[in-house]
Length: 210
Image 1 (cartoon, rainbow, N blue to C red):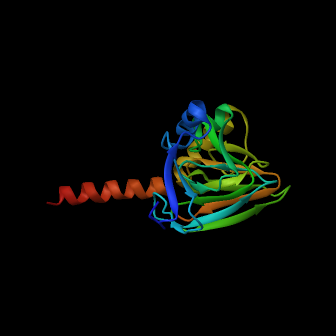
Image 2 (cartoon, rainbow, N blue to C red; image 1 turned 45 degrees about the horizontal axis):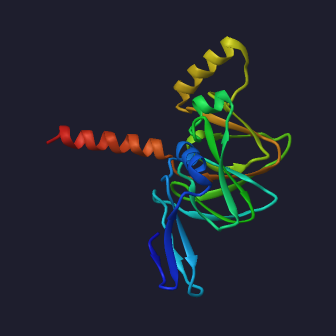
Image 3 (tube, rainbow, N blue to C red; image 1 turned 90 degrees about the horizontal axis):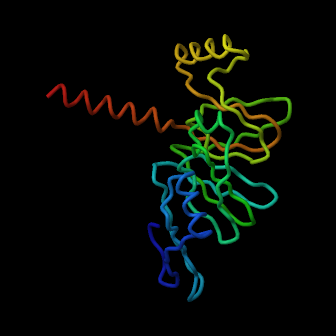
C-alpha cells in the first residue's frame, strides 16, 4: 500500500486460517498476514505498488479462474478467494511457479497482478500450442493444460530429454512452459532472473575495477 484516504482502514489478517495462510506462503512467498483495506467510513481511494518495477493488470475473476506465478499477486477484492493448488511433479521441480503449490484465484471480483516490465495478454486456442519462457509467465487461465519443457522442439525418451537439455544450454533458452487448450495468458516483457544475474555481474565488475 502506497497511500489511502482517511475513510479507509488498514488491517492485517490470516485469510483462510492458519493452513490457508501457510500454503500461500509456500506457494507465492507472501507474508503470513495479508493487508485488508476496508471502506468503513465511506468510499475512498488507495494506491498500490508491486514489489518489482512493472505494470499492474486488473483481471475479472468469475467463470474463469487464474493460476499465478511467483510474485504476481498484488491485490484482490473481497469476493476473490486465493488458495494453493498442488502441481504435478515435473512442474513443481522445474517450473518457477510456486514449487509444489501454485496460487489459484477463484470466486468473483477483481484481481490485480503484476510482472517485471510491461504486461501482455496472449490468447491460446486449441490446436495451436504456445511456448513461453518460464520467467516471463505471470498468470494463466486454470483451464489451460501446461507442462515444463527444456526445448521448443519435440522428442521423447532419454535421448530426447538429453538432446533437449543440450539444445536448451546452447540456445540460451532455459526452461519453457508449453500451454495447450483455450484460455488467456499474461506475460511480462522482462526476465527477473536474467536481470538479477546482470546486476550481479555489473556489481562484481565494478568492485574488481577499483
